[in-house]
Length: 317
Image 1 (cartoon, rainbow, N blue to C red):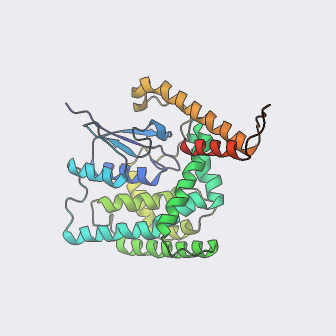
Image 2: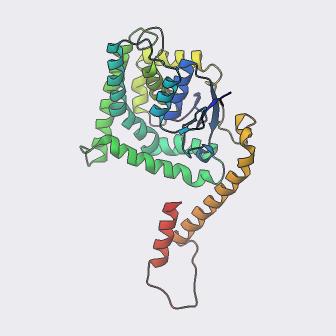
Image 3: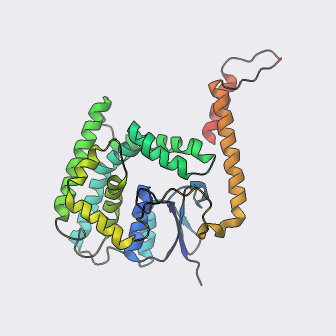
């Protein structure tokens, strides 16, 4: 008998089954199709078989860590939410997916990871509380830098140099995208009628994050809340497919007693590695910032040599 498929994803918060956009999209697609997954909701990406989240371990032991590749694998396993779509609806799916990535994704990245108030009071706060020590000291900052790079790639070459101008342009396009989605959905339950498709999984993950998080700086959130059919759409999916996951619960602070305990032989190893990595990062920071200095009795080397070596070492970690 083949082993069950296992999905590793970020744990939930803000009234959602996961606080991560990609994890939420994959989880929602799996619920739509009824795919038999053993789900591990974790707050330590190093516990994932790929070191990133989300990740799928297939029944044959293969590990897939890119969201659209995970969904492609589920389709190959006969869990296809788009099976009944016409060719026209398939083309519409591709068009709207492209629209989401070009117009809405950059603003979501900006809202949660670049906007200072939102990042400090909401995003970093959640990850710092949910992650185990010592990862919570340096991983949120590393994730923010990765999202900054992602935003640069998403924005392309035609990026206004002025930060305010960039923000205005991003939010204007995102508002237009939300209005278009509202018009396309109309009074339907889902985008293609009474049954959910892959487009619904992605649209829901984008909208639900924006709708549910308590953002101190919520310009786009206010616009979304004025589009009542999109709000009802998110509420409907949450209540129908995540009736237990949608409850607001505090981030996990203790070791869960669920499926994660099945990896007990690896837990001590991972904890030791986490502590060593955290200590190395903190020592490196202390040396580089001058909090701690090392004095030698021997003649001094060329200035900057020691600090440069430590910086390279920290980047490799």
